[in-house]
Length: 139
Ligand SMILES: [Zn+2]
Image 1 (cartoon, rainbow, N blue to C red):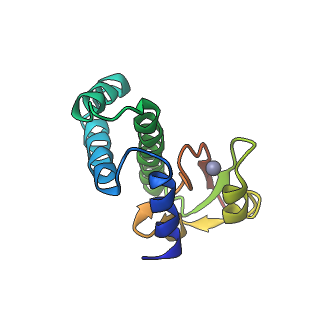
Image 2 (tube, rainbow, N blue to C red):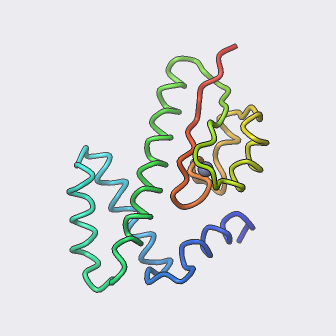
């Protein structure tokens, strides 16, 4: 397992009631729901029903925010591709984003589309609840 993946795994498992396996299931429900155009509220309700035993609802919310953010980043990339954009910057959002600052060299780094996929997963989000967004860079 790569360092990056290990980090994610730890973030998700850290003092939380959601196992990695459940996390994968949650992620699938979110992505499938978004693809079908189901509302955020309906997806959260579905998650709450499916994981009734989970005491920690904020946990599900964290995964929801993070994974829906990833889905939207992917959509932005798809749109950019159609417009012939091949380079991106990342707009760093939020005060407490040391990871994102490092990953983006304080928002200065220019990324290719390929560099915005880490371990087969689209970034940002770079960490749970990351708010950073991609900005197409036009030549
Ligand atoms: Zn971030």
